[in-house]
Amino acid sequence: MPKGRRAKAQPRTKLKASRSGGSLRALARLLGVSHTAVEKAIVSGRLVTSVGRTARGRPRILDFQAAVQEWREGGRSNGNGDSQPKAATLAEAQLRVAIQRELKLDLENRRTGGVLIDRAAEDRRDYEIGRTVRDAILNVPDRLAAELAAEMDAGRVHRRLEQELRAALVALAEVIDRDHPMATGALADDGVADGVR
Image 1 (tube, one colour):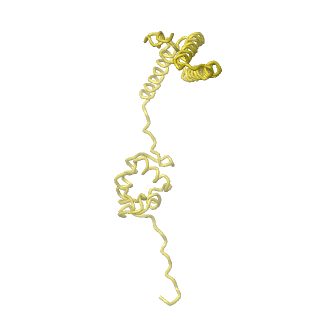
Image 2: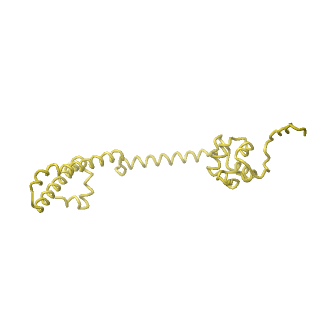
Image 3: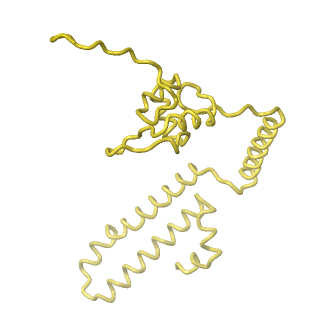
């Protein structure tokens, strides 16, 4: 070859399936899909045995023949690397619809029967109860501050604090029973609510 002349680059031909290994893009060209479709097939587990990792951890095709075989066995591509589900028979489709209707009806029956409750409403109710408890307890020091500041006997201070806290909790239980009748019903069944006097 004369000096200063470069050899012409050979045009790239379609890869043969017998090639032992290579890049994801080469497999994509061989299959006639995008390289992202091949990447998605690897992530979804459609291509497993034909894929290895480089020293940097990137996926690499180890065997093109195995990759092509795995691709074909995995189903038809819909353009984004996902395999299309096999067509169901009419009976299978009707069975799935009947099962979904049954589940929906069961859920609706449980909701109307009182077995299931509205979570958002319960969360609001719990928030309101918590806020009421917080306000009732935090108001005790404001009511007693002047009275207890003048008291010298620790026993009297303790008794007075206990009386005020019990009174606040009893009043709170009455408010909760009035506004949210189901809130303290479980406590009363366990005997816990009766212990507050």
